[in-house]
Image 1: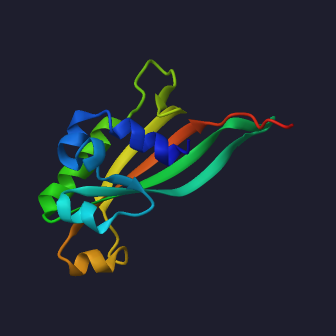
Image 2: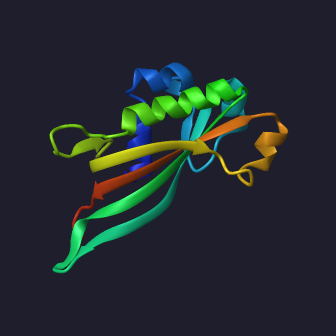
Image 3: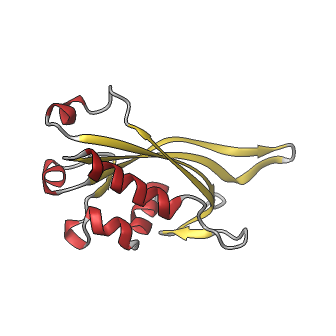
Length: 152
């Protein structure tokens, strides 16, 4: 499972998020792109990987990566877009909050996560803006454990 899929699986378990983005078959948070039906139904979000850098130390590369994810939240009103973005930021910022221990997002081991809500840049999704959709972005900076490669 990718970190994007892990984040989506984690968000599916959070009532503050599912209250806005639906649940079950009606869940409207996806990786890489949204369906037109998602956007027409209610607040929706798309998760994208904006960067993945292995953590290097003097002794070599550690088994962690610094990952940057963006979650673009779209809705027919600014308040709904902001509400979904804030709900996602609230359940991810400071994750895992377990006394310095790592937590799971899906099957991904996450050591830390920091969230920041910002405006979606104007050049992103001009077709949605033409449909009078409003966007807010959640920028996530994460430290994610990587499994060691297995050679056959």
